[in-house]
Structures are given as structure tokens and as C-alpha cells.
Amino acid sequence: MKDPASHPRRAPAEPGRVRASGGVGGHVGAPHADRSEFLRVERRDPVATIWIDRQPKMNTMTVAMRNEFPGIFGALDGDDAVRVIVIRGAGGKAFSAGGDVAEFLTLAPADLEHWGDTLTSAERCRKPVIAAIDGFTMGAGLELALACDFRVATRRSEFAFPEVRLGMIPGSGGTQRALRLIGMTRGKLFMMTGQRIPAERAEAWGLITECVADDGLDAAVETLAKELSDKAPLALRTLKMVLNRGIEAPLDTALELERKAYAWLRSTHDYEEGVRSFLEKRPPKYTGR
Image (cartoon, rainbow, N blue to C red):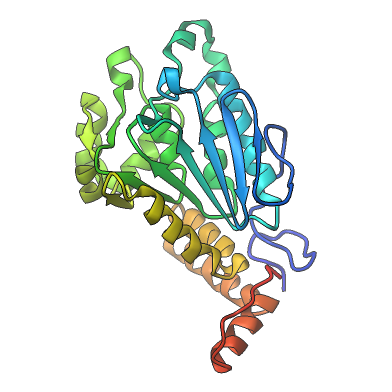
């Protein structure tokens, strides 16, 4: 049986693969760090952490930085030693305060048509992606966080889409992802006023996954990353695909996708290992096959 995304089977095939296309990448044994000017990747298998490190500018992202994300996520997606990806901002003041406003007037509208795809690479990545948030998370920084599967934030963090104050709107997926998470009433209030909201309200609204104490971020992210990395990789990747595609599809189509994914997973080695380990009362040893 073909996998639910209809890719050719190899050993076995997996849904929704994103390929590397440049940027910081390439697997080197853990722990290891790769870096460009403002982005660096640290691998401590099975977790890879992408650091946004432009601290003097509150980790605002230039066009060049954004253009690196597809390659970074693609390389990590193809690295079998990595099971979970974390992205976070350096310095403890901001995850990312958004785009670099100084560049805005130099960009032609045609240059921006596909700009959102650079941040969507987090969502397209087959592996679980956690945004570890400490501090200001605004504009494109919030759009990047919303493209992740999980958002864990410190209590001191603040969130905003301030674009309306600059005569524009969120343009890299923010309007639609936020709307799906918090609904139309809160979405209009949040985005049309450009207001900042604290982490506790963001959690209550469903914008973030969890709000933790200011000194509890590392522990919370480590716990979640371990819980995810212990699961069968194929099951997590397939589930991410089913959830992300299913929410956009009519119910009948989404249910059919679920059925096909369920049937395909039962043909994998990881499924057999999961069942056998349960019956034999031992921890499973998943291999991603």
C-alpha cells in the first residue's frame, strides 16, 4: 500500500518531505553547531535547536535571514538523527521582534509575493517543531512561531501583530494561522488594533501551547522535546501531515486521509515494534522504518 501522501515507497515512504535547499545544514555528530551570520543550529541528538541571534536588533529578521529557513529546515528534516526541532531567540529579550523595518521600503511588492514561504518551512517540515519563546514575539517573529507545532512561552513574553500601525497587514501566514487558533472575534481585535497581549492571555486564547515561569522555559521545552523524541518518528510525521492537511479539507476528505494514513502505518516496522514492546512490557526501540 502506498503511503497517504502518494510518494514512491523507499523504506518505507514518508509523507510530506521537505528537501534541503541551502542554508545552515549537513549532519555532523552531536553535539555540534553550524552557523551563519545571525542563525545557528546546535545538534544534541535527537534534538536540533535553531537559534535566532541578532540580539542588538531584538532578533529582527532580515530578508537574507528569512531566506535561510527553508534550507535549514530541509537539512534537519533529512537528518535521521534529529527527531525534534526547537527554534528560539538568543539573549532573553525577544524570540523575534519581527522583520527588519529598515529594509521595508527597499523591497518591491513583487519581491514579497512568496516571502511567506520562507517561514512556512517550519510547518512543512515533517518533524515536530517547538518554538521556545522568551520575550517579545511580534510581526514576522510571531508568524514564524505560529508555523511551529508547539509554542512554549515564558510569562514575561508579549505577542503582537503591529503591522496595521505601519499601514500593512501580516503577510507571512499570520492572519490565517492566528485566525484558526483564536477565532474571528479575538483575531480581529488582536490584529486590527495591533495590541500587545501577555503570555497568559495568549495561552487562554489558544495562541500558544503553554505559558511557563520565566525560569522554567528550558525545563519545559526539554520535557516536551523528550516526550516527542521518544515516540515513533513515522507516526509523528504522519500525524502532523494528517492534522495540518485535514483541517483545510472537507470532513469526508480528511477522514479518508486519516484512514489511508492509519492503514499505511500498520505496514511499518515501527508499528510492529510498538505493539511487540507493549506486549513484552519493555520500552520500544523505534527506527523510523
